[in-house]
Image 1 (tube, rainbow, N blue to C red):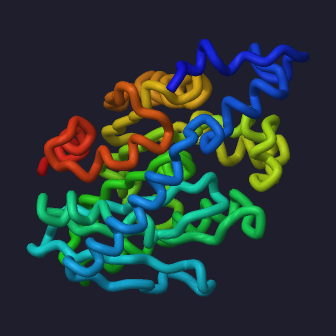
Image 2: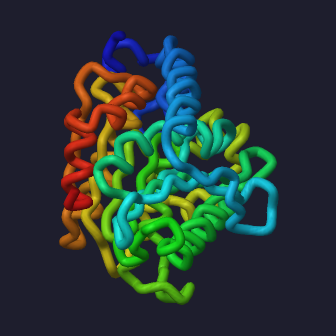
Length: 296
């Protein structure tokens, strides 16, 4: 696949940084820049089906009042184990927690409990509401972790694509104001996320994100670095668009500027969707880094 710097240039009036409207649309068109993306989405589905058949799991556990507010839970084998809270991608408008169950095959054998969270989808749900639901799900996990052998004091949040953005918003949350410890999150991994939603608002992704300027700022993790931080791993594919790369790099700089530990990782020769299998191999570079963060 061609590099973004050589193939994504389209002439026109600049609307954000050095990008014309057409260029910006392409920069934030994750599917359009990965023509074989469907292969990886199908892989997620089939592997998740396999993992649900092979591992103990509790499906569609409610954490809120709406039908979309459900979790899939894969208990740890030992009490007091760390918990992985994984948030799915799909550009806020597609997918579900069921497409993330495959990663339980990496984390449960390593000694963790694994939880995949569902949320209502855009455009029917606003980004504000999606963030609210993900926060509510994490609160539920903290309050109920011992029921699936998890330790509420060892929660790690993970996500990719839109889930990477939502992971950033979990980091930005004032948990103490919600009755949880200020340091509820002990670590986080975000892959190919978006941490400043202003360029998303200006792109055609706003057809479903439906952000105004205030909502874009309110839901941009880079503008809400918390007073209490945790170790953060940021990863992206080497052939992703320059904007997806920049978003992760800039968020890493903002996180490190507060003195919080951050590690960045570029997955060579991988586009936006080709990074999906990287957490399936427990010996892979990304998996090892996440498990190391969790001290597993």
